[in-house]
Image (cartoon, rainbow, N blue to C red; front, top):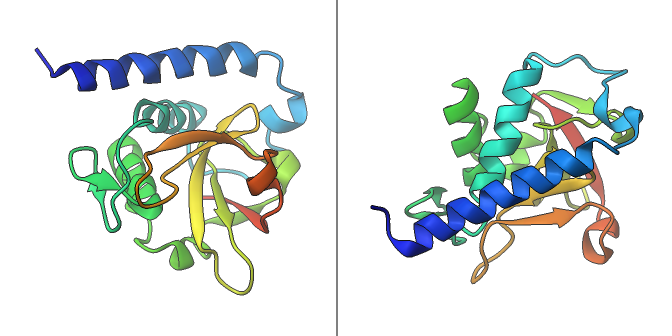
Length: 165
């Protein structure tokens, strides 16, 4: 039997998935359907990426981390999920993620897309879009992987780019 904290993390992830699936039913069609850049990912793969990312909410942050047991930084989280769900290893750094895939307009965002934040020429933080205006990311030292809203105070003020692998 897994340790209690692992079971709790799994239950929290399941609750988040269920809540997002319910909220996703009321999401405007502009967010759920892609009108612009096509994806090389199937709808099922994109959904699995989002579900897997949600299941990792609560995992501790660790700079350079790329496993649930060792913790994650933001690019390590993205790499872990993409490698496990589609077998495609993305670039390891956030700066290089800024050139991975194709840029997507905000109104064309779909689950599994990447959300990149930062000012200037290269992004400094990244997460995985999971639908309903939310993304999963590993934010900072001392924190843990969490689910946030793109339109929340801090994140709404950041320069944002969306990419579709």
